[in-house]
Image (cartoon, rainbow, N blue to C red; front, side, top):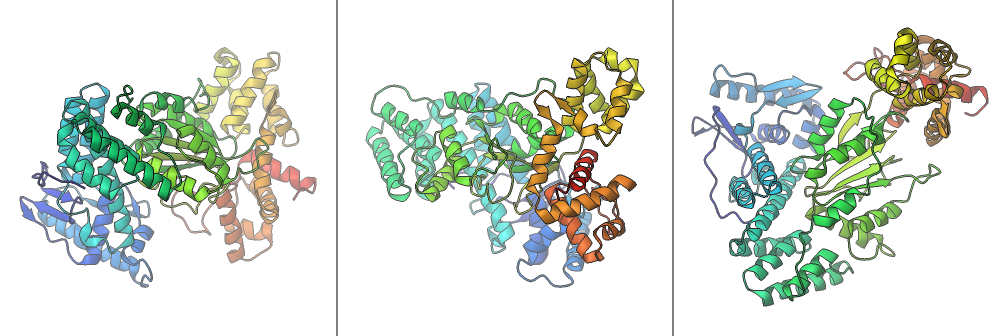
Length: 610
Protein backbone atom coordinates (compact mmCIF):
# COMPACT_ATOMS: atom_id res chain seq x y z
CA UNK A 1 0.00 0.00 0.00
CA UNK A 2 1.62 3.31 -1.01
CA UNK A 3 2.11 5.50 2.05
CA UNK A 4 3.86 8.66 0.89
CA UNK A 5 3.06 10.61 4.04
CA UNK A 6 4.44 9.81 7.49
CA UNK A 7 2.24 8.81 10.37
CA UNK A 8 0.37 11.80 11.69
CA UNK A 9 0.63 12.86 15.28
CA UNK A 10 -2.24 11.49 17.34
CA UNK A 11 -5.14 13.89 17.28
CA UNK A 12 -6.60 12.63 20.52
CA UNK A 13 -7.76 15.05 23.15
CA UNK A 14 -7.87 12.14 25.59
CA UNK A 15 -4.94 10.84 27.64
CA UNK A 16 -4.40 7.64 25.65
CA UNK A 17 -4.13 7.09 21.89
CA UNK A 18 -4.14 3.58 20.42
CA UNK A 19 -2.84 2.51 17.03
CA UNK A 20 -3.49 -0.61 14.95
CA UNK A 21 -2.36 0.83 11.60
CA UNK A 22 1.20 -0.37 12.03
CA UNK A 23 2.53 -2.18 15.10
CA UNK A 24 0.14 -2.31 18.03
CA UNK A 25 0.94 0.69 20.19
CA UNK A 26 -0.47 3.13 22.72
CA UNK A 27 0.80 6.49 23.93
CA UNK A 28 -0.22 8.53 26.96
CA UNK A 29 0.90 12.12 27.33
CA UNK A 30 3.27 11.67 24.42
CA UNK A 31 5.01 8.66 26.00
CA UNK A 32 4.60 5.06 24.82
CA UNK A 33 2.78 2.66 27.10
CA UNK A 34 4.26 -0.80 27.75
CA UNK A 35 1.55 -3.19 26.57
CA UNK A 36 2.89 -6.30 28.23
CA UNK A 37 3.77 -9.78 26.94
CA UNK A 38 2.68 -11.14 23.58
CA UNK A 39 -0.50 -12.91 24.76
CA UNK A 40 -1.68 -9.78 26.54
CA UNK A 41 -1.00 -7.78 23.36
CA UNK A 42 -3.05 -10.29 21.35
CA UNK A 43 -5.98 -9.80 23.70
CA UNK A 44 -5.68 -6.01 23.46
CA UNK A 45 -5.36 -6.09 19.66
CA UNK A 46 -8.52 -8.19 19.39
CA UNK A 47 -10.48 -5.88 21.68
CA UNK A 48 -9.28 -2.81 19.77
CA UNK A 49 -10.29 -4.46 16.51
CA UNK A 50 -13.87 -4.51 17.80
CA UNK A 51 -14.06 -1.23 19.73
CA UNK A 52 -17.07 -0.65 21.98
CA UNK A 53 -18.37 -4.12 21.12
CA UNK A 54 -18.49 -7.17 23.43
CA UNK A 55 -15.88 -9.73 22.34
CA UNK A 56 -16.79 -13.26 23.53
CA UNK A 57 -14.30 -15.11 25.68
CA UNK A 58 -14.26 -17.93 23.11
CA UNK A 59 -13.06 -15.52 20.42
CA UNK A 60 -10.25 -14.25 22.63
CA UNK A 61 -9.29 -17.82 23.51
CA UNK A 62 -9.06 -18.81 19.83
CA UNK A 63 -6.83 -15.81 19.09
CA UNK A 64 -4.41 -16.46 21.94
CA UNK A 65 -4.44 -20.29 21.83
CA UNK A 66 -5.60 -21.29 18.32
CA UNK A 67 -4.80 -24.99 18.60
CA UNK A 68 -4.72 -26.28 22.16
CA UNK A 69 -5.94 -23.86 24.84
CA UNK A 70 -4.92 -24.79 28.38
CA UNK A 71 -7.44 -25.67 31.04
CA UNK A 72 -6.61 -22.35 32.68
CA UNK A 73 -7.31 -20.31 29.51
CA UNK A 74 -10.25 -18.41 31.01
CA UNK A 75 -8.29 -17.61 34.17
CA UNK A 76 -5.29 -16.49 32.12
CA UNK A 77 -7.50 -14.16 30.08
CA UNK A 78 -8.75 -12.62 33.31
CA UNK A 79 -5.13 -11.98 34.30
CA UNK A 80 -4.37 -10.27 30.96
CA UNK A 81 -7.50 -8.12 31.23
CA UNK A 82 -6.68 -7.20 34.82
CA UNK A 83 -3.16 -6.16 33.79
CA UNK A 84 -4.54 -4.02 30.97
CA UNK A 85 -6.97 -2.36 33.37
CA UNK A 86 -4.12 -1.57 35.74
CA UNK A 87 -2.10 -0.12 32.87
CA UNK A 88 -4.91 2.14 31.71
CA UNK A 89 -5.76 3.13 35.26
CA UNK A 90 -2.17 4.27 35.84
CA UNK A 91 -2.23 6.30 32.60
CA UNK A 92 -5.70 7.79 33.07
CA UNK A 93 -6.23 8.90 36.61
CA UNK A 94 -9.92 9.45 37.23
CA UNK A 95 -10.96 8.14 33.79
CA UNK A 96 -13.88 5.82 33.34
CA UNK A 97 -13.15 2.11 33.40
CA UNK A 98 -12.15 1.17 29.88
CA UNK A 99 -12.40 -2.63 30.03
CA UNK A 100 -15.74 -3.99 31.19
CA UNK A 101 -17.21 -7.45 31.31
CA UNK A 102 -20.20 -7.55 28.98
CA UNK A 103 -22.41 -10.28 27.43
CA UNK A 104 -20.09 -13.17 28.21
CA UNK A 105 -16.99 -11.34 27.01
CA UNK A 106 -15.10 -8.08 27.33
CA UNK A 107 -15.72 -4.66 25.83
CA UNK A 108 -13.09 -1.95 25.41
CA UNK A 109 -14.62 1.52 25.63
CA UNK A 110 -12.93 3.96 23.31
CA UNK A 111 -13.74 7.23 21.54
CA UNK A 112 -13.14 8.09 17.89
CA UNK A 113 -10.21 10.38 18.71
CA UNK A 114 -8.48 7.68 20.75
CA UNK A 115 -8.06 4.97 18.09
CA UNK A 116 -6.57 5.40 14.62
CA UNK A 117 -8.92 2.89 12.94
CA UNK A 118 -11.98 4.77 14.23
CA UNK A 119 -10.50 8.05 13.04
CA UNK A 120 -9.71 6.44 9.68
CA UNK A 121 -13.32 5.28 9.30
CA UNK A 122 -14.74 8.69 10.26
CA UNK A 123 -12.54 10.50 7.73
CA UNK A 124 -13.40 7.99 5.01
CA UNK A 125 -17.14 8.42 5.64
CA UNK A 126 -16.78 12.20 5.60
CA UNK A 127 -14.83 11.99 2.34
CA UNK A 128 -17.46 9.85 0.66
CA UNK A 129 -20.22 12.16 1.90
CA UNK A 130 -18.38 15.15 0.43
CA UNK A 131 -18.07 13.34 -2.88
CA UNK A 132 -21.80 12.55 -2.91
CA UNK A 133 -22.48 16.27 -2.41
CA UNK A 134 -20.29 17.04 -5.42
CA UNK A 135 -17.39 18.47 -3.39
CA UNK A 136 -14.68 16.36 -5.03
CA UNK A 137 -11.78 18.49 -3.79
CA UNK A 138 -13.05 18.21 -0.24
CA UNK A 139 -13.53 14.48 -0.73
CA UNK A 140 -9.98 14.02 -1.98
CA UNK A 141 -8.58 16.01 0.95
CA UNK A 142 -10.49 14.02 3.58
CA UNK A 143 -9.70 10.66 1.98
CA UNK A 144 -6.01 11.58 1.75
CA UNK A 145 -6.09 12.54 5.43
CA UNK A 146 -7.53 9.10 6.21
CA UNK A 147 -4.79 7.37 4.20
CA UNK A 148 -2.10 9.42 5.93
CA UNK A 149 -2.98 7.72 9.22
CA UNK A 150 -1.36 4.54 7.94
CA UNK A 151 2.17 3.71 9.00
CA UNK A 152 5.04 2.61 6.82
CA UNK A 153 4.58 -1.04 7.79
CA UNK A 154 1.44 -3.22 7.48
CA UNK A 155 -1.16 -3.09 10.27
CA UNK A 156 -0.47 -5.31 13.28
CA UNK A 157 2.56 -6.77 11.52
CA UNK A 158 4.11 -7.68 14.87
CA UNK A 159 1.23 -10.03 15.77
CA UNK A 160 0.32 -11.59 12.43
CA UNK A 161 1.50 -15.04 13.40
CA UNK A 162 -1.89 -15.29 15.15
CA UNK A 163 -4.52 -16.30 12.58
CA UNK A 164 -7.21 -14.22 14.26
CA UNK A 165 -5.10 -11.06 14.26
CA UNK A 166 -3.89 -11.73 10.72
CA UNK A 167 -7.49 -11.92 9.54
CA UNK A 168 -8.27 -8.56 11.15
CA UNK A 169 -5.13 -7.03 9.61
CA UNK A 170 -6.16 -8.24 6.16
CA UNK A 171 -9.60 -6.72 6.68
CA UNK A 172 -8.00 -3.39 7.56
CA UNK A 173 -5.83 -3.52 4.46
CA UNK A 174 -8.91 -4.22 2.32
CA UNK A 175 -10.59 -1.13 3.81
CA UNK A 176 -7.54 0.96 3.05
CA UNK A 177 -7.47 -0.31 -0.53
CA UNK A 178 -11.10 0.75 -1.06
CA UNK A 179 -10.43 4.21 0.40
CA UNK A 180 -7.36 4.54 -1.81
CA UNK A 181 -9.53 3.84 -4.85
CA UNK A 182 -12.06 6.45 -3.66
CA UNK A 183 -9.26 8.99 -3.24
CA UNK A 184 -7.70 8.25 -6.62
CA UNK A 185 -11.04 8.58 -8.44
CA UNK A 186 -11.74 11.91 -6.71
CA UNK A 187 -8.32 13.26 -7.65
CA UNK A 188 -8.72 12.11 -11.25
CA UNK A 189 -12.08 13.83 -11.55
CA UNK A 190 -10.65 17.09 -10.23
CA UNK A 191 -7.92 17.04 -12.89
CA UNK A 192 -5.08 15.87 -10.62
CA UNK A 193 -4.61 12.44 -12.18
CA UNK A 194 -0.82 12.75 -12.21
CA UNK A 195 -0.57 12.57 -8.39
CA UNK A 196 -2.21 9.13 -8.41
CA UNK A 197 -0.36 7.32 -11.21
CA UNK A 198 2.63 5.96 -9.32
CA UNK A 199 0.66 4.77 -6.30
CA UNK A 200 -1.97 3.10 -8.47
CA UNK A 201 0.72 1.31 -10.48
CA UNK A 202 2.24 -0.12 -7.31
CA UNK A 203 -1.15 -1.31 -6.09
CA UNK A 204 -2.08 -2.87 -9.44
CA UNK A 205 1.13 -4.89 -9.27
CA UNK A 206 0.03 -6.24 -5.87
CA UNK A 207 -3.64 -6.74 -6.83
CA UNK A 208 -3.59 -7.43 -10.59
CA UNK A 209 -7.17 -8.78 -10.81
CA UNK A 210 -8.85 -5.93 -8.92
CA UNK A 211 -10.89 -4.26 -11.64
CA UNK A 212 -11.65 -0.95 -9.96
CA UNK A 213 -7.98 -0.40 -9.21
CA UNK A 214 -6.98 -1.22 -12.77
CA UNK A 215 -9.68 1.10 -14.14
CA UNK A 216 -8.48 3.98 -11.99
CA UNK A 217 -4.88 3.43 -13.14
CA UNK A 218 -5.95 3.34 -16.80
CA UNK A 219 -7.97 6.52 -16.34
CA UNK A 220 -5.11 8.26 -14.53
CA UNK A 221 -2.69 7.36 -17.34
CA UNK A 222 -5.18 8.52 -19.94
CA UNK A 223 -5.87 11.83 -18.19
CA UNK A 224 -2.11 12.37 -17.84
CA UNK A 225 -1.64 12.06 -21.61
CA UNK A 226 -0.08 8.58 -21.45
CA UNK A 227 -2.52 6.81 -23.80
CA UNK A 228 -0.10 4.10 -24.93
CA UNK A 229 0.51 3.03 -21.33
CA UNK A 230 -3.23 3.09 -20.60
CA UNK A 231 -3.91 0.82 -23.58
CA UNK A 232 -1.10 -1.49 -22.49
CA UNK A 233 -2.60 -1.66 -18.98
CA UNK A 234 -5.92 -2.77 -20.48
CA UNK A 235 -4.30 -5.35 -22.73
CA UNK A 236 -2.31 -6.81 -19.84
CA UNK A 237 -5.54 -7.08 -17.85
CA UNK A 238 -7.41 -8.71 -20.74
CA UNK A 239 -4.71 -11.34 -21.16
CA UNK A 240 -4.49 -11.95 -17.41
CA UNK A 241 -8.24 -12.52 -17.12
CA UNK A 242 -8.23 -14.91 -20.07
CA UNK A 243 -5.23 -16.84 -18.76
CA UNK A 244 -6.20 -17.02 -15.06
CA UNK A 245 -10.00 -17.11 -15.14
CA UNK A 246 -11.07 -17.69 -18.72
CA UNK A 247 -13.03 -14.40 -18.65
CA UNK A 248 -13.31 -11.24 -20.70
CA UNK A 249 -13.09 -7.71 -19.22
CA UNK A 250 -16.38 -6.31 -17.94
CA UNK A 251 -18.56 -3.89 -19.88
CA UNK A 252 -17.31 -0.99 -17.73
CA UNK A 253 -13.67 -1.80 -18.52
CA UNK A 254 -14.48 -2.18 -22.21
CA UNK A 255 -16.17 1.23 -22.18
CA UNK A 256 -13.10 2.77 -20.53
CA UNK A 257 -10.92 1.16 -23.18
CA UNK A 258 -13.14 2.76 -25.82
CA UNK A 259 -12.71 6.14 -24.13
CA UNK A 260 -8.92 5.80 -24.23
CA UNK A 261 -9.19 4.94 -27.92
CA UNK A 262 -11.30 8.07 -28.44
CA UNK A 263 -14.65 6.33 -28.97
CA UNK A 264 -16.56 8.48 -26.51
CA UNK A 265 -16.89 9.13 -22.79
CA UNK A 266 -16.81 6.31 -20.28
CA UNK A 267 -19.17 6.48 -17.36
CA UNK A 268 -18.11 5.99 -13.79
CA UNK A 269 -18.58 2.36 -12.82
CA UNK A 270 -21.27 3.07 -10.25
CA UNK A 271 -23.74 5.19 -12.29
CA UNK A 272 -26.59 3.62 -14.19
CA UNK A 273 -25.67 0.12 -13.15
CA UNK A 274 -26.37 0.94 -9.49
CA UNK A 275 -29.91 2.03 -10.32
CA UNK A 276 -30.50 -1.17 -12.29
CA UNK A 277 -29.19 -3.30 -9.45
CA UNK A 278 -31.34 -1.42 -6.94
CA UNK A 279 -34.32 -2.33 -9.11
CA UNK A 280 -33.68 -6.02 -8.39
CA UNK A 281 -34.99 -5.49 -4.86
CA UNK A 282 -38.59 -6.65 -4.33
CA UNK A 283 -41.24 -4.09 -3.49
CA UNK A 284 -41.11 -3.01 0.14
CA UNK A 285 -44.11 -2.81 2.42
CA UNK A 286 -45.37 0.75 2.78
CA UNK A 287 -46.77 -0.12 6.19
CA UNK A 288 -43.48 -1.42 7.60
CA UNK A 289 -43.77 -1.18 11.38
CA UNK A 290 -41.28 -1.03 14.24
CA UNK A 291 -37.94 -2.84 14.19
CA UNK A 292 -36.01 0.42 14.80
CA UNK A 293 -33.28 -1.29 16.85
CA UNK A 294 -32.86 -4.07 14.31
CA UNK A 295 -32.72 -1.61 11.41
CA UNK A 296 -30.12 0.48 13.22
CA UNK A 297 -27.99 -2.61 13.89
CA UNK A 298 -28.27 -3.78 10.31
CA UNK A 299 -27.34 -0.38 8.91
CA UNK A 300 -24.42 -0.13 11.33
CA UNK A 301 -22.96 -3.52 10.36
CA UNK A 302 -23.56 -3.45 6.62
CA UNK A 303 -23.21 0.28 5.98
CA UNK A 304 -19.78 0.61 7.61
CA UNK A 305 -16.59 1.31 5.70
CA UNK A 306 -15.36 -2.28 5.71
CA UNK A 307 -18.66 -3.99 4.90
CA UNK A 308 -19.99 -6.98 6.81
CA UNK A 309 -22.13 -10.10 6.72
CA UNK A 310 -25.26 -10.21 8.86
CA UNK A 311 -27.64 -13.14 9.38
CA UNK A 312 -31.25 -12.37 10.32
CA UNK A 313 -32.93 -15.39 11.90
CA UNK A 314 -36.43 -16.05 13.13
CA UNK A 315 -39.44 -18.34 12.65
CA UNK A 316 -41.52 -18.33 9.48
CA UNK A 317 -43.63 -15.19 9.31
CA UNK A 318 -41.46 -13.10 11.65
CA UNK A 319 -40.72 -10.47 9.00
CA UNK A 320 -37.12 -11.33 8.14
CA UNK A 321 -37.44 -10.62 4.43
CA UNK A 322 -39.31 -7.36 5.00
CA UNK A 323 -36.58 -6.18 7.37
CA UNK A 324 -33.78 -7.08 4.94
CA UNK A 325 -35.47 -5.33 1.99
CA UNK A 326 -36.31 -2.27 4.09
CA UNK A 327 -32.68 -1.96 5.20
CA UNK A 328 -31.40 -2.46 1.64
CA UNK A 329 -33.55 0.42 0.43
CA UNK A 330 -32.46 2.68 3.29
CA UNK A 331 -28.80 1.92 2.50
CA UNK A 332 -28.99 3.04 -1.13
CA UNK A 333 -26.47 5.86 -0.66
CA UNK A 334 -23.93 3.55 0.99
CA UNK A 335 -23.74 1.13 -1.96
CA UNK A 336 -23.01 2.98 -5.21
CA UNK A 337 -22.46 -0.30 -7.08
CA UNK A 338 -25.97 -1.51 -6.30
CA UNK A 339 -28.14 -3.71 -4.10
CA UNK A 340 -29.22 -7.13 -5.34
CA UNK A 341 -31.80 -9.56 -3.95
CA UNK A 342 -31.66 -13.29 -4.65
CA UNK A 343 -34.04 -15.90 -3.26
CA UNK A 344 -32.29 -18.97 -1.90
CA UNK A 345 -35.27 -21.28 -2.50
CA UNK A 346 -37.40 -22.24 -5.46
CA UNK A 347 -41.14 -21.55 -5.56
CA UNK A 348 -41.83 -25.03 -4.15
CA UNK A 349 -39.62 -24.31 -1.13
CA UNK A 350 -36.74 -26.55 -2.24
CA UNK A 351 -33.22 -25.22 -1.76
CA UNK A 352 -31.69 -23.69 -4.87
CA UNK A 353 -28.29 -25.01 -5.94
CA UNK A 354 -25.40 -22.76 -5.00
CA UNK A 355 -24.23 -22.54 -8.62
CA UNK A 356 -27.72 -21.51 -9.69
CA UNK A 357 -27.63 -18.57 -7.27
CA UNK A 358 -24.07 -17.75 -8.33
CA UNK A 359 -25.20 -17.58 -11.95
CA UNK A 360 -27.98 -15.14 -11.02
CA UNK A 361 -25.62 -12.94 -9.00
CA UNK A 362 -23.08 -12.83 -11.81
CA UNK A 363 -25.79 -11.90 -14.29
CA UNK A 364 -27.37 -9.24 -12.09
CA UNK A 365 -24.06 -7.57 -11.34
CA UNK A 366 -22.69 -7.69 -14.86
CA UNK A 367 -19.67 -9.84 -14.06
CA UNK A 368 -18.15 -10.93 -17.36
CA UNK A 369 -17.62 -14.53 -18.38
CA UNK A 370 -19.59 -17.78 -18.27
CA UNK A 371 -20.65 -19.39 -15.02
CA UNK A 372 -20.80 -22.89 -16.40
CA UNK A 373 -19.17 -25.29 -17.01
CA UNK A 374 -16.58 -24.18 -14.48
CA UNK A 375 -18.24 -22.78 -11.33
CA UNK A 376 -14.85 -22.41 -9.61
CA UNK A 377 -13.82 -19.79 -12.15
CA UNK A 378 -17.17 -18.04 -11.76
CA UNK A 379 -16.75 -17.96 -7.97
CA UNK A 380 -13.28 -16.43 -8.34
CA UNK A 381 -14.66 -13.83 -10.73
CA UNK A 382 -17.54 -13.09 -8.36
CA UNK A 383 -15.22 -12.65 -5.37
CA UNK A 384 -12.92 -10.42 -7.41
CA UNK A 385 -15.91 -8.29 -8.42
CA UNK A 386 -17.09 -8.01 -4.79
CA UNK A 387 -13.62 -7.00 -3.56
CA UNK A 388 -13.42 -4.20 -6.12
CA UNK A 389 -16.94 -2.81 -5.70
CA UNK A 390 -19.27 -1.63 -2.98
CA UNK A 391 -22.51 -3.58 -3.29
CA UNK A 392 -25.11 -5.07 -0.94
CA UNK A 393 -26.26 -8.64 -1.54
CA UNK A 394 -29.47 -9.93 0.07
CA UNK A 395 -29.76 -13.73 0.11
CA UNK A 396 -33.30 -14.45 1.21
CA UNK A 397 -34.60 -17.57 2.99
CA UNK A 398 -31.32 -19.48 3.14
CA UNK A 399 -31.76 -23.15 4.01
CA UNK A 400 -28.21 -24.10 5.01
CA UNK A 401 -24.63 -22.92 5.07
CA UNK A 402 -23.41 -24.99 2.12
CA UNK A 403 -25.79 -23.26 -0.29
CA UNK A 404 -24.21 -19.83 0.28
CA UNK A 405 -20.54 -20.57 0.86
CA UNK A 406 -18.50 -18.79 -1.76
CA UNK A 407 -21.25 -16.24 -2.38
CA UNK A 408 -20.49 -13.99 0.61
CA UNK A 409 -17.90 -11.19 0.37
CA UNK A 410 -14.52 -12.15 1.81
CA UNK A 411 -12.82 -8.76 1.56
CA UNK A 412 -13.48 -5.23 0.41
CA UNK A 413 -16.41 -2.95 1.16
CA UNK A 414 -19.31 -5.07 -0.09
CA UNK A 415 -21.84 -6.45 2.42
CA UNK A 416 -24.35 -9.27 2.59
CA UNK A 417 -27.60 -9.83 4.50
CA UNK A 418 -28.89 -13.38 4.87
CA UNK A 419 -32.35 -14.31 6.14
CA UNK A 420 -32.92 -17.80 7.50
CA UNK A 421 -35.23 -19.77 9.77
CA UNK A 422 -32.30 -21.69 11.22
CA UNK A 423 -29.23 -20.22 12.87
CA UNK A 424 -26.67 -21.08 10.12
CA UNK A 425 -24.22 -21.64 12.94
CA UNK A 426 -21.53 -22.91 10.56
CA UNK A 427 -21.02 -19.45 9.04
CA UNK A 428 -18.31 -17.42 10.72
CA UNK A 429 -17.45 -14.68 11.31
CA UNK A 430 -20.87 -13.06 10.87
CA UNK A 431 -23.08 -10.66 12.82
CA UNK A 432 -26.49 -11.91 13.91
CA UNK A 433 -29.96 -10.56 14.61
CA UNK A 434 -32.55 -12.89 16.15
CA UNK A 435 -35.90 -11.43 15.13
CA UNK A 436 -38.40 -11.59 17.97
CA UNK A 437 -42.19 -11.28 17.52
CA UNK A 438 -43.70 -7.80 17.53
CA UNK A 439 -44.34 -6.12 20.83
CA UNK A 440 -48.05 -5.96 21.64
CA UNK A 441 -48.06 -2.24 20.80
CA UNK A 442 -46.50 -2.88 17.35
CA UNK A 443 -48.88 -5.76 16.67
CA UNK A 444 -51.90 -3.61 17.55
CA UNK A 445 -50.58 -0.84 15.28
CA UNK A 446 -50.43 -3.25 12.33
CA UNK A 447 -53.87 -4.69 13.11
CA UNK A 448 -55.38 -1.22 13.39
CA UNK A 449 -53.80 -0.07 10.15
CA UNK A 450 -55.47 -2.94 8.29
CA UNK A 451 -58.87 -2.90 9.97
CA UNK A 452 -59.08 0.80 10.75
CA UNK A 453 -58.19 2.22 14.17
CA UNK A 454 -61.81 3.07 14.94
CA UNK A 455 -62.74 -0.59 14.81
CA UNK A 456 -60.12 -1.50 17.38
CA UNK A 457 -61.42 1.20 19.71
CA UNK A 458 -64.79 -0.53 19.82
CA UNK A 459 -63.28 -3.48 21.70
CA UNK A 460 -59.62 -2.95 22.68
CA UNK A 461 -59.67 -6.00 24.98
CA UNK A 462 -60.66 -8.28 22.09
CA UNK A 463 -58.03 -6.66 19.85
CA UNK A 464 -55.37 -7.49 22.44
CA UNK A 465 -56.64 -11.08 22.63
CA UNK A 466 -56.27 -11.37 18.84
CA UNK A 467 -52.64 -10.28 18.70
CA UNK A 468 -51.76 -12.45 21.69
CA UNK A 469 -53.42 -15.46 20.06
CA UNK A 470 -51.26 -14.74 17.01
CA UNK A 471 -48.18 -14.84 19.25
CA UNK A 472 -47.57 -11.28 17.94
CA UNK A 473 -46.09 -12.96 14.87
CA UNK A 474 -46.05 -10.30 12.11
CA UNK A 475 -47.48 -12.59 9.41
CA UNK A 476 -50.28 -13.89 11.64
CA UNK A 477 -51.22 -10.39 12.80
CA UNK A 478 -51.22 -9.17 9.19
CA UNK A 479 -53.41 -12.07 8.03
CA UNK A 480 -55.81 -11.40 10.90
CA UNK A 481 -56.06 -7.77 9.86
CA UNK A 482 -56.60 -8.68 6.20
CA UNK A 483 -59.34 -11.15 7.17
CA UNK A 484 -61.12 -8.70 9.45
CA UNK A 485 -60.91 -5.98 6.81
CA UNK A 486 -63.03 -8.19 4.54
CA UNK A 487 -65.34 -9.58 7.24
CA UNK A 488 -66.59 -6.21 8.40
CA UNK A 489 -69.59 -7.79 10.17
CA UNK A 490 -67.46 -10.06 12.40
CA UNK A 491 -67.14 -8.80 15.99
CA UNK A 492 -63.56 -8.69 17.26
CA UNK A 493 -64.52 -10.71 20.31
CA UNK A 494 -65.91 -13.54 18.17
CA UNK A 495 -62.78 -13.65 16.02
CA UNK A 496 -60.61 -13.62 19.16
CA UNK A 497 -62.56 -16.60 20.47
CA UNK A 498 -61.90 -18.51 17.26
CA UNK A 499 -58.16 -17.85 17.52
CA UNK A 500 -58.17 -18.90 21.16
CA UNK A 501 -59.56 -22.30 20.14
CA UNK A 502 -56.54 -24.53 19.29
CA UNK A 503 -58.70 -26.76 17.11
CA UNK A 504 -59.49 -24.03 14.55
CA UNK A 505 -56.93 -21.24 15.11
CA UNK A 506 -54.76 -22.11 12.09
CA UNK A 507 -57.86 -22.45 9.89
CA UNK A 508 -58.77 -18.86 10.77
CA UNK A 509 -55.35 -17.47 9.79
CA UNK A 510 -55.98 -17.49 6.05
CA UNK A 511 -56.64 -14.48 3.83
CA UNK A 512 -57.01 -15.28 0.13
CA UNK A 513 -53.87 -17.10 -0.95
CA UNK A 514 -51.92 -16.08 2.16
CA UNK A 515 -51.87 -18.85 4.74
CA UNK A 516 -50.00 -18.98 8.02
CA UNK A 517 -50.31 -22.77 8.08
CA UNK A 518 -48.52 -23.14 4.74
CA UNK A 519 -45.62 -20.99 5.95
CA UNK A 520 -45.26 -23.02 9.13
CA UNK A 521 -45.57 -26.25 7.12
CA UNK A 522 -42.61 -25.21 4.96
CA UNK A 523 -40.44 -24.82 8.03
CA UNK A 524 -41.75 -28.12 9.42
CA UNK A 525 -40.69 -29.95 6.28
CA UNK A 526 -37.16 -28.53 6.64
CA UNK A 527 -36.79 -30.53 9.85
CA UNK A 528 -35.56 -34.09 9.82
CA UNK A 529 -37.88 -36.86 10.99
CA UNK A 530 -36.19 -37.16 14.39
CA UNK A 531 -36.40 -33.40 14.94
CA UNK A 532 -40.10 -33.40 14.04
CA UNK A 533 -40.79 -36.17 16.55
CA UNK A 534 -38.87 -34.36 19.29
CA UNK A 535 -40.54 -31.03 18.52
CA UNK A 536 -44.02 -32.56 18.60
CA UNK A 537 -43.36 -33.95 22.09
CA UNK A 538 -41.77 -30.73 23.36
CA UNK A 539 -44.62 -28.68 21.88
CA UNK A 540 -47.03 -30.66 24.04
CA UNK A 541 -45.00 -29.83 27.14
CA UNK A 542 -44.69 -26.17 26.12
CA UNK A 543 -48.43 -25.91 25.47
CA UNK A 544 -49.31 -27.22 28.91
CA UNK A 545 -46.76 -25.17 30.85
CA UNK A 546 -46.21 -22.05 28.69
CA UNK A 547 -42.68 -23.25 27.99
CA UNK A 548 -40.55 -26.14 29.19
CA UNK A 549 -37.48 -26.70 31.31
CA UNK A 550 -34.78 -29.29 30.85
CA UNK A 551 -36.60 -31.53 33.31
CA UNK A 552 -39.73 -31.14 31.22
CA UNK A 553 -37.78 -32.01 28.08
CA UNK A 554 -36.38 -35.14 29.74
CA UNK A 555 -39.89 -36.23 30.70
CA UNK A 556 -41.38 -35.47 27.27
CA UNK A 557 -38.57 -37.18 25.34
CA UNK A 558 -38.04 -40.03 27.80
CA UNK A 559 -34.25 -39.58 27.94
CA UNK A 560 -31.50 -38.43 30.26
CA UNK A 561 -30.24 -34.86 30.65
CA UNK A 562 -27.40 -35.16 28.13
CA UNK A 563 -29.63 -36.45 25.34
CA UNK A 564 -32.32 -33.90 26.17
CA UNK A 565 -29.81 -31.04 25.99
CA UNK A 566 -28.59 -32.26 22.58
CA UNK A 567 -32.16 -32.52 21.28
CA UNK A 568 -33.19 -29.09 22.54
CA UNK A 569 -30.04 -27.38 21.27
CA UNK A 570 -30.45 -29.02 17.87
CA UNK A 571 -33.96 -27.54 17.67
CA UNK A 572 -32.63 -24.14 18.76
CA UNK A 573 -30.21 -24.36 15.83
CA UNK A 574 -33.14 -24.92 13.44
CA UNK A 575 -35.01 -21.95 14.90
CA UNK A 576 -37.94 -24.08 16.12
CA UNK A 577 -37.18 -23.57 19.83
CA UNK A 578 -36.19 -20.29 21.44
CA UNK A 579 -33.92 -19.93 24.45
CA UNK A 580 -33.27 -17.11 26.94
CA UNK A 581 -31.20 -14.20 25.59
CA UNK A 582 -28.94 -14.01 28.65
CA UNK A 583 -26.56 -16.59 30.05
CA UNK A 584 -28.25 -19.25 32.19
CA UNK A 585 -27.53 -22.89 32.92
CA UNK A 586 -29.37 -25.53 30.91
CA UNK A 587 -31.27 -26.72 33.98
CA UNK A 588 -32.44 -23.19 34.88
CA UNK A 589 -33.45 -22.10 31.36
CA UNK A 590 -37.06 -21.86 30.25
CA UNK A 591 -37.34 -22.83 26.58
CA UNK A 592 -40.26 -21.88 24.37
CA UNK A 593 -41.97 -23.03 21.19
CA UNK A 594 -43.93 -20.26 19.42
CA UNK A 595 -47.67 -20.69 19.96
CA UNK A 596 -48.65 -21.24 16.33
CA UNK A 597 -45.81 -23.70 15.77
CA UNK A 598 -47.01 -25.52 18.90
CA UNK A 599 -50.46 -25.80 17.32
CA UNK A 600 -49.05 -27.12 14.06
CA UNK A 601 -46.76 -29.63 15.80
CA UNK A 602 -49.61 -30.97 17.94
CA UNK A 603 -51.83 -31.11 14.86
CA UNK A 604 -49.17 -33.07 12.93
CA UNK A 605 -48.68 -35.46 15.83
CA UNK A 606 -52.43 -36.05 15.96
CA UNK A 607 -52.60 -37.09 12.32
CA UNK A 608 -49.42 -39.19 12.50
CA UNK A 609 -47.31 -36.74 10.51
CA UNK A 610 -44.17 -37.15 12.65
